[in-house]
Image (cartoon, one colour):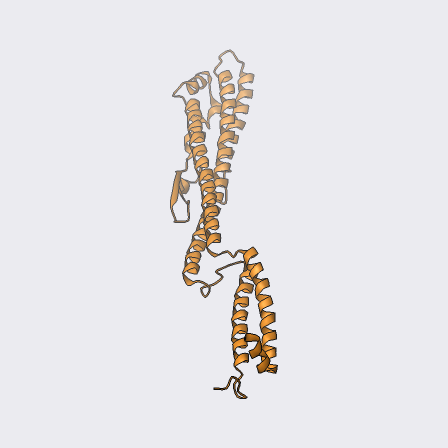
Length: 277
């Protein structure tokens, strides 16, 4: 069989096949560089892409859970602030109630102290009823006495208890402005209305502080999970850009040489054959 044929240019066919392979490789490298991914879609690596999509879904769910926890964190911060103000007001109320329990004060002094007490109890009620966040008040809304919040990307819940502070705190001292000497003394006893209101408030400060700590710790933990998921996802699908850049340069040179070889083969089959000897 003759080496050359006027009908079939074998040299050009070999050069074209080699150039096509180079172009295919070059296209893949350019895709990895432009997207930053070794696996940008299912065509690159179906199994890896499927795993990556699952991880992305988990990350989206965890991110959404943290957003919800952020809202609850705000709600608990408002509630804690309200309880702290209630506690401060109750301490002031106790200070004045001590004076009301003194039978030696004049009627005018009692009237003045009772006026101060009335303002304090009004403040206490306002602190409780105004402790709303995003339309929810866990210190006053009966429907919010048990609150469930999504805590992680698997749909787990954290449940904490609201508290009816109007009933258990304010109502106990709402009539403090009418205290007589005996009434003030009774309110100050261990089981008295004022002492009970103070104890209830401090108990809830402890409870709501614990709720806040849990939420903050869960937010931090979810962030750690997201960091780990992102790192794993990167190892699975991210391209090594330094390696791909070097590969791109090599392929561009091969492409240039392949184009030149094809041109030579088309112009002179005999010359190309001599080059392969």
